Length: 390
Image: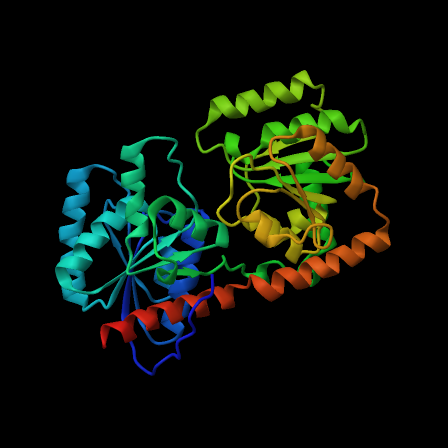
């Protein structure tokens, strides 16, 4: 879906972004990146959320954060939030209000209509409907922007197919990766040794890495079964992600590891502050999602680090990997095919691995940079401002 490219005008404006919480997710990182770009360009950035550990990052950038229970799905609280957002719009002379999730979208829509300002939404991922009409109507708030940003062509088609969003209202802007954090030249041997010791991985052992929070749709069970089919005793695996309170699922994963007799080679690691090192240590990075990713950040970050990458052939991942050129795509929820793909990657010659790594890094950095994403988003704000002047 082509995106219009309006010329940026020399004017300053105020953007109010609304997001449920400022935690560790991709939507939150995008909020921070766009906020930084707004402030650098001399615009005013206001963020409303229910708070979270990353609020301090917004404040350090020079943005204003206002806490409000915009995470709530309670209709009465959504209505109250709309009234409060209306007052903020009037007090700070906001030009564009930008909602990044469903519940905030309803509050922001009401506030925008009451004040006459432009309303923008971003759909970061497809939402499940599964025959539930109430859920479909609730989800539709994210599709009601004057313009709607989709972070992949897959999400754009989801909006058209499920909510009849006109194609000319959709702007496809892929997630932007902060490549300064994923620089091979900055990864030291000492940092790799430290992490390998923490994970109890022998220095020369092949490592399969699956980053992603511990939730069933991320496919950790598929990878565990694939490891059992691999029949290689020298290959280690790390499932890297927080269970976020899903202790039953974590216990299920640990039981699977035990049942397949993989306790000595498969680890669950809750957290890693040095993802560049984690990727660099990996012989292959896997994204095993059994439901479509809106974008697929892991596959892009791994390619940026020149690491062979396997992802499932659904959702946004199909747009981030060039099959057999920068990585491999396998059917979802298929441990046998996943095991075959891992074996294929681990059997590559070093020369072939290096060639794929170079192509993957070039592909990721050419198409998915943070700078490209923020520049395109500011152009959408500018486009809305220009429409308001006609």
